Image (cartoon, rainbow, N blue to C red; front, side):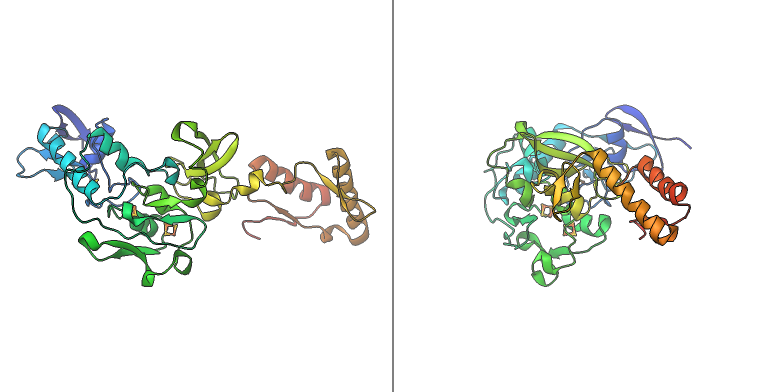
Length: 356
Ligand code: SF4
Ligand code: SF4
Ligand code: FES
């Protein structure tokens, strides 16, 4: 059955179960959000996504309200826009800083962009600030809670997307604080350092310490972005590599990556230094009579390897050779690897590192 409603005087259709925000976004309506992350259950905390519903006394939060047949919605009336501006000014009044370096994280400029869009007066409301910044001895995650706006996206992504439940909310109101169990360090908690909380934080309260090493030298316009696939395992997570002057300065998970939808593990998120490490092998090496490794050509290296296989095969038989393919290898290389063992040595002694 086709369900129908009206958004800003236009008739639209929707499917049962969709929220008003989802229907509006599908029809290219720009409704501002702060606590919303489309990968997570709607939370309804910030109220920025309010819209007018004909017949309702008060505006409704579009991210938590299910669309129903015959609804008449207005997304950007003067009154609604005024409410949104006031909400943003109230949030800003608790916050130490709004303009943060984009290298803090994927979503770190969301609050700043909305503040600019609504031309908010940061000093309209004054008073108590909330959140206490934690010094946390770990190499990856900055915990700068004086920029926290209590949207709980970090807590929810950690629980719902990562399944870790490493962080939670302590207290309420101005005393709200994001903590680990027993309010300790992240490294002593269940945190796997996946970086999900950094990348969803809309204010940069959580920041990527590694990427921020480049912050002093690089501004927004000097950051290059290249979409690629993480090279670590066989899952195929999409990532955007951040570069400056041909050097990798950080990684953003691709929120629209079909295999990961913004999720990464600690390796994909942070372990990229090997790419430009001075110890990285760029040519084959062979061990010569002096016992040392020497640079050589691919032809010599492959001949040496083939000689080694032949020697073992002749000396100890076909079952003395076992192949383990890399989970990082593309299908074509994996196919060749099993062919090498099956056709080359006549055994099924082949597996891959994802199982081995
Ligand atoms: S890095 Fe990952 S596991 Fe650790 S707190 Fe953040 S979301 Fe949770
Ligand atoms: S740390 Fe960031 S994501 Fe977490 S509640 Fe605060 S503002 Fe939201
Ligand atoms: S985005 Fe809907 S309440 Fe925050």
